[in-house]
Length: 89
Image (spheres, rainbow, N blue to C red):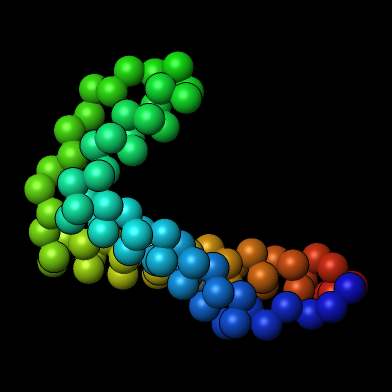
């Protein structure tokens, strides 16, 4: 088993999660988000009781930053556990 570079893993996972939410913010800005939520919920046999709020650039930036940070921290913790469990013996 190979040792994981926890910082790089955090950057990769955080960046991917941030990118996904940047695309979501773009969908909100373009007015496509409500239809997408409705479609996804229908695929799961659910109704669409949610309302997508108007786009706000500051909120979009906060969303991307927080999701990146959570992804980075989560992946760093997972990488540290990996290194302890599989390599640390």
